[in-house]
Image (cartoon, rainbow, N blue to C red; front, side, top):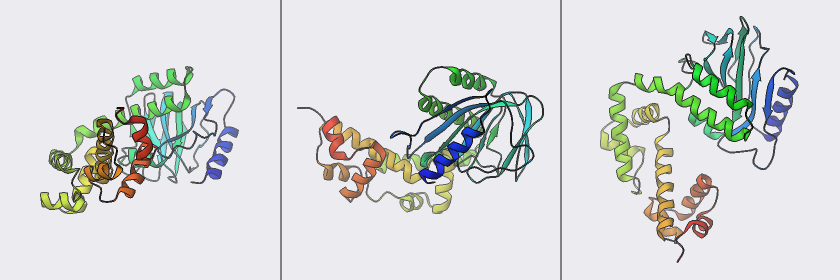
Length: 287
């Protein structure tokens, strides 16, 4: 999504906000565009506007119902809404929301690369995009919206808390065989993440399973790809090595399982926001 498109979307949303709603926008700035999760707004909606017509968005939204009853319709199903219902809408996925009696909800609009990872298990097709019975969470959303706080940080915190609540029940329903396999995969990664040969093929061969199956089971249980999990372990290890006093980028890359110091530097910068040399200068052991 381009910056211009995002700004146009923000402008349209501002025009649609009624006076009796509460709406907190995040003003565009140097900090506005976060490659992982960018918050656009945090809104209490007291008048449902989609009616019977399908609408689509270029962003993610996470909603929680605070009052009344209604329903959300997607191309797959229609699901009732009531206080404590948490649900998601996705970029380019058509939906409509119907007010069936005093329906009010709060939503957060956001986008970013991490959003796709966080929501990888939530799809409109398998109905994991919605969960009921979260009245306690609705209370937290309402309180957070009306408090004086940093809108971006408050909204990100609510997203993480809400996805955790949504995922809690799903985790208990996972097949025990998948759980066992995922834990075996995790052990292999934890034992070998400094090995330059570690890869999906390496893991699948050790377990005598198909690569696609190994990848799918791990993502189903842990909510992250094997590649991203390995990368996080390696970058965390690099940070520990720097704190212990190692200052050679080439050595750090080698100890963390990277053949190429330049590629390691690129990944390190993407994960930490700064090149290894700068991280070493700021966080290395002072002699």
